[in-house]
Image (tube, rainbow, N blue to C red):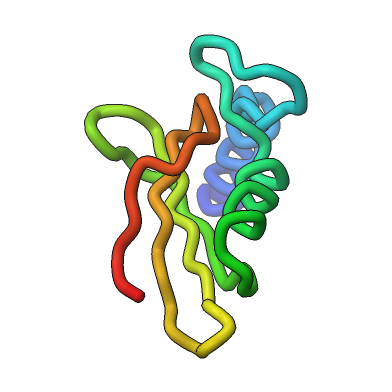
Length: 94
């Protein structure tokens, strides 16, 4: 019975917790993220290839996308993109 009460309490807490902010279209504002679709379009315009994976983290104390991108020749590059402005701020590999 105690397990059931704990499970119910956990589900209730999860259901009432605030959802994380989602990336939105339009110009970025303080604390908002550039839409991932726009970030991927920017990378594709600069470097033909395909998107493999994206993770979130920090770069220089700011939120950042780490976009894993496969180039046309098969090499893999990780683009570091400022999550608020959508600007590419670094590149690793490739």
